Image (tube, rainbow, N blue to C red; front, side, top):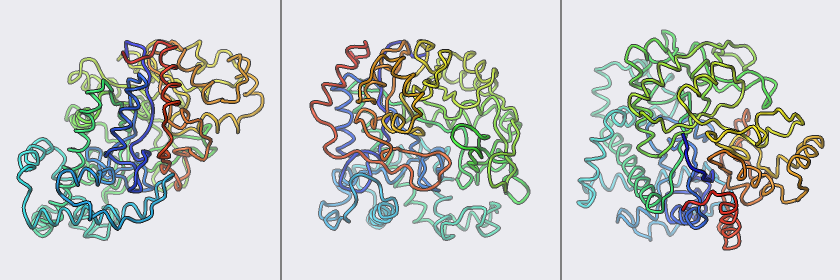
Length: 499
């Protein structure tokens, strides 16, 4: 339970400004922490930090445990003495207001590859030897399999593991033993790059804590099929004898689309998880909480029942709600963490069993202000229905920005909003933010796009559309003293200052 009034801002690190084509864990991230501290903001909410795969989505990662190498700061590598500033002199002309993932991935992958080759040939710098060994020891539960998976994947032309050579796909132990020897340098590269990510993130998180800033992370209900997790533990997922999914995840038709959302992720073989007392899940939560302080569990309703879609379907219309062992799983979580540091993303098709699961474990749910103004005063998303143990958002990464929502909303919704909020201010994002901040919800989180009053061109994700997402970046001069003062005043006025 979140016990004190506070506020947070939602901004994924990729959206930070900087010269390297994508937000990273370097100087701009530290300036971001300073902005939060200067405005009395307690929480920084982010999206999953994993290594992105299909569609550059942080919700489709090659591992549920590893970190995203594209977040590694080149400036931080200079500080470690791994490169010189001269190595960054031939920087491509990256755009500043969006991420061109193709060019960023090519440039940064080459940079990181050169570094790991140098370290492999010349030896680990003495100043990093102890830290590197400690990282290897601390990450054994996932790192060896992940590094092997990524090394094989590259050697196989980066195709999905289900299309690898049969002995590799089916994990023939003799072949894997030979492969570990053959790909020794490639495996080291993957481990060393993970070390750099976790070192930079750990340093940044320590800085956040020094400013009394807590980080809210994100743990998706599902994992990507093309991942080290599915390849290394196929028995934990609903796969057939050829290791193809039998049923995949998504949601039925809803407000986001008439054909639902077909995510395509594999779903869980729950009896296999039950046999090991949900050890994989507990390790996953533990790994996430080594990176963040609170965890927003995406698609929480999946832990009560998940929409199972036959593999091969072209949309999510045909499927079946099948039960998940929510209570047993959360009991396993609670055995490790008596006060569960979890926020439940309880949006979408919510049934009594989902509500019961959240309430039984006293987890705060989410309230989205954009969903409130349909004209019904009994709408649960209207602030007068909020409870203290909840998290209020103007919108999430899956929604339009507040300004974009208002521009595209039906007139009747706009009229009801103005009636409810008793305000016709054209600065609509701040009108909605004030409504969220003055609610009784102990925690209020707003996307940075709303703090900046941006329209739908700055939307982070459009569910159901595979391309063109996740690329928004904040302009280098977006934060100024006037904005700081205004946001701090908002925290002060509604008793949300991080004192």
